[in-house]
Length: 398
Image (tube, rainbow, N blue to C red; front, side, top):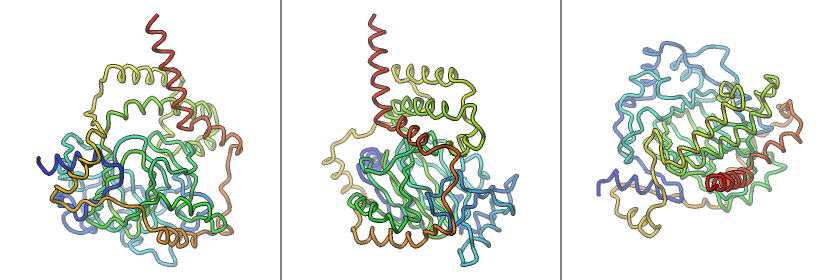
């Protein structure tokens, strides 16, 4: 069996995160240093990159994307490196250019990228770029679709991961179609509440991803990601057959959230929706219902415009045999030592600055926020979907 076929089977059947140490990728666009990549970007880009800024002192809640601002001083890539390569005492913000589609990046800065080395031949340009300074982070969440392949190109990133069953406080505010966030603030835990985080350490996995390393995040695993130095990474979500079923869940969630924002002020919309969702609100419910009906038909017929992959098609015993037979450094992560987890929490809690950064002003009541999160809870959505298919099956048999 070829190495890339073995890797594909490992990736699609793993139940824990995997690290591929110093994986031998030869992507032409990353020859040279990060400075070389940024210089090519500046030479070929038709417009300046839009960097997001986030206040380092913002610690009352997770550093939600809605709280970030655009840089008032437009920077090119080389200026970003000069200004943010090392965060110093005078810095008040971190900066990032992240979650960027391939077609948003100049051709020479993505030349040679493909995921065939991992056994996935048909990814096209369906991957994302993540560039950020030290402390640039993504609040803890899980991806609703796919298995995540993350290639660390430059710098170092800390990944704190939890399995799907971990009792984190899920929320759909801010709403994003492809992510479910939690309320725990791993960037700067409140020292007064840190004990409520400690029991999670029994299920915490951790790695510091170095240049040349690859991380495999299994489907629905929670993860908090933070750059430990100026970092560039690329990721690809492997589309799965089980995703077609989850799409129906997301249509139901989308309808619930949109029913709360339709006709509301921009302030309410900007609070409830992640920035990348603001332009995607359906003009009327019937538009969304038409998409839902098409998704139901596709699920029943097995049709999809993309190649979708099976998961969990080999036993864990066979998976371990396969892992031992592969001629690469593939390392399943294990639960981190509890003392290390506590040290990480305590170190991050030193960032908490309640006085410097008062709680975020909310344009809706806490009762309304709880209602949205309760209605969108995965267990509630799953029950709604089961009832829908029960009625659909009964109507089809009449």
